[in-house]
Image: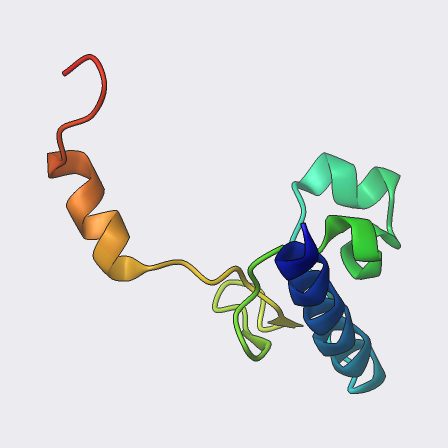
Length: 85
């Protein structure tokens, strides 16, 4: 549990710094974003494994933080054998 706590503290520092620098938070589904307009900046909605830096959302042009996703893993996943296959 301690490694996760340390990781989340680091992520929280990244999040706090990004807010100070004016980034727009995470992207939420439209209805949720309208219902909770402050949620994109709320700590509870942030990614557990965020990208190291916020980036420009190509659709909206807004500076946001995305999740860190392994492209290599994504490419392999459909071809991997898993339970029940």
